[in-house]
Image 1 (cartoon, one colour):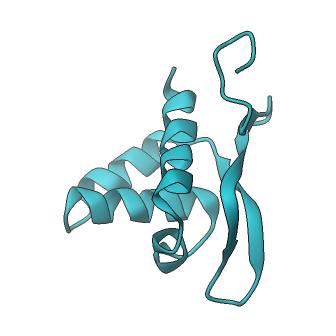
Image 2 (cartoon, rainbow, N blue to C red):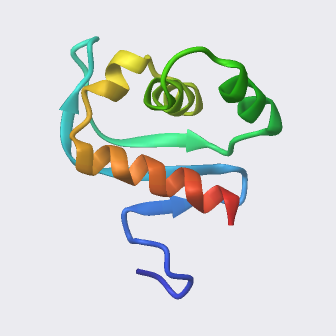
Image 3 (tube, rainbow, N blue to C red):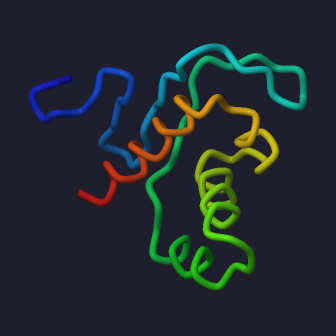
Length: 96
């Protein structure tokens, strides 16, 4: 953790994004292997989109994470749970 309590696998930039180091390499549906993702800072519009979406809370959250990381929801679903938790932490970090 850094001096602000941010885990070392999350790197926030001053221009509104966070680089997230995944727990391990993941192969996306396209066949590309990734070891990190970039999430942009959520906006009020993203929150409204989440609130107005249909489906379970889990499905809505996955759709939001996919949108913020410019990925498909199916690729988010491929992540190991430990890596998905890192995405959730990154999202929460934007709200503090």
